[in-house]
Length: 141
Image (cartoon, rainbow, N blue to C red):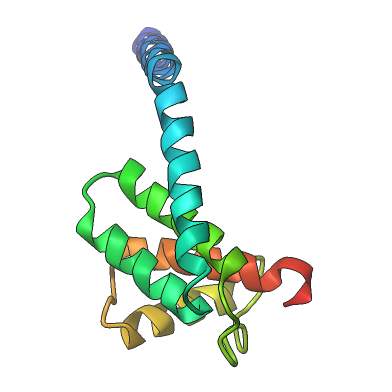
């Protein structure tokens, strides 16, 4: 019992240190991340004004595939969302796209779509297609 209590206490201490480190990083990087998010959003709007919905997804996947790190890939998803807002509709773009809360249908759809794009197994593809689900589910598109 004493060993178990020591393990739990150790986990709590590690959790507090990690949480504090994350908060410190966020305090130092938060403004920079917000600014980068704003810039990427504007870039998405600009790109979307000159392409269709499928073009937004293709460009977002290209950007995510050329970037290293979770932050850059997350920003590529922000790009896709902004781009889709300003893009020209692609015929059938939202056809067959399941609602995000349809877990099994969503998983199968994402796998099929990523395979069709030659990106089977790539987490950034799955992540970006969630943005398509969000977009298509908004306001009954």
